[in-house]
Image (cartoon, rainbow, N blue to C red; front, side, top):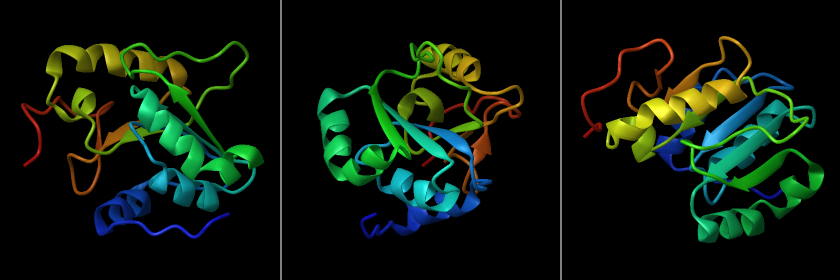
Length: 152
């Protein structure tokens, strides 16, 4: 796998995730895949990171940047909005979902957040958290009341 340099912000988020070998994660809005590559390295060949992004250009950029990990089966990328995302037929549930600066989850688009959380919860194993970078550094939306607006 290629060398991966993370910004201090992304490093703090990745370090805060409860990662363990074999974990299956969903990253919402993860283009171009810097965090996913580091997570895939940490969860190992039995783990998996699914990157959801609503932009076809972002998906294409992620496919280029993560080509080695996609070929190895540790990362996949899907063109999908969190508000409409679903599992593919036969796709196993994921352990957790997370997002960094994604408007539908960080409070910038509260009218769509409920739909996004509902769809993500259907993709997660029971009790699987949805973590966003609106805390220190992460907030669990499945256990916290919704923020009133975006973090400044």
